[in-house]
Every structure is written in structure tokens, then in C-alpha cells.
Length: 81
Image (cartoon, rainbow, N blue to C red; front, top):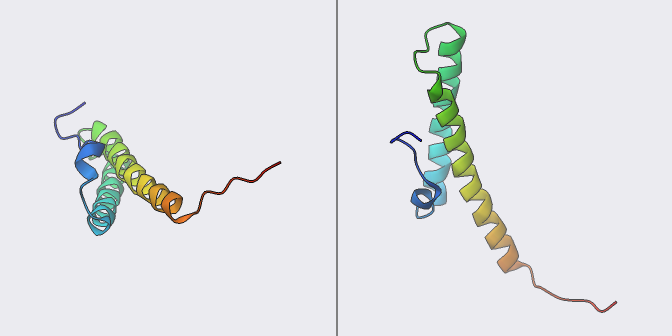
């Protein structure tokens, strides 16, 4: 991986708002990279892949938080069969 890669462990301490902002910025970056590729101006095509994967990392952390909150909020009851 490249040296600019952000790991999920680096994202977990960030707030939900910071993660939302990061996803928004990454999606803008991805859009610009796709536009450059379509126009033949993109020099490093690997940037598209790294942007897509970083978006996935951030969204994974967000989903993990949502599952954790949902599991803590829902009472765990077992029913007899």
C-alpha cells in the first residue's frame, strides 16, 4: 500500500461529523479523478483505486458504529421454543 493510506484504526477516534466530512471530500476527489480520466488528463490511475478504498474504510467504520449502537439499544431476549 502507499504511504498515504489511512488505516481504519486511525479513523475510529474521529467524530461522526469528521467522518461525514471526510467521506464528502473523498467523493468529491473521486468525482474529479473520474472526470480527469474521462478527459485523458489523469496521470496516476491508482489514485482512483485508493480514493475508492479509503471511502470504503470510512464507511466501514461508520457502519461498525451504527451496529454497535443498535446492538446496545436493542434488548437481548431469548425465547423458549
